[in-house]
Image (cartoon, rainbow, N blue to C red):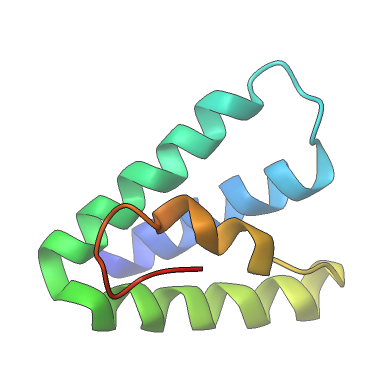
Length: 83
């Protein structure tokens, strides 16, 4: 499951970073939030940390952009996740 979610999350964040004014931007952000909830339900805060660490580095390497601002989309999932 994580591999599919990682690919989907990568695609969504890459799209959001590259298309901040797209008409479907909000729906992409909503799906990012859903993925966070799915990850947390499956593996807790560790699952969130591990996934975002991987995605953040991948985005930096592959498209030379920063994914850190999107961490806050998962802020309401757990009190431990606060960015």
